[in-house]
Image: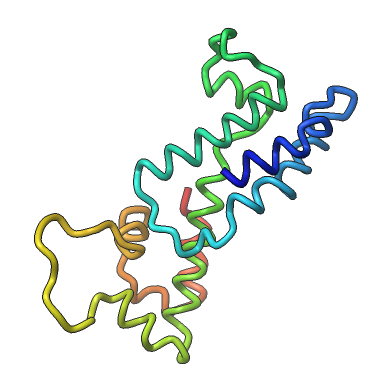
Length: 162
């Protein structure tokens, strides 16, 4: 919601056709995506959240290109006219994985490491297990958390996440 507010404050600038599309996209990346991606490293990405992120991105592109909803243009069509691809979720995944590697390798994060690995004492709750940070990363990479201890190998894994 804060992202939409920020966009609306800058709407006259971001929707101005006298400025090049490339400049407007760079300004969106600088001012709008930074608001959206604040503390994205610690998000637990569920399918609903990923869909909302994509919807916000499409909302911004449609406003910038002045495409009305009555035009019935698909998301792929909007991305083609904006000369963009689906990079926002990729950015969130990269940030999340980099943060995980930082925590796993850091010696000052013993409590966070225990929480991430699920080694907290006590009973587990009834029902389906919650989606966690590690489950997100296992789903994306199909690897164990212990590869994050090797910085170079984990950097290769992060580079290949899409």
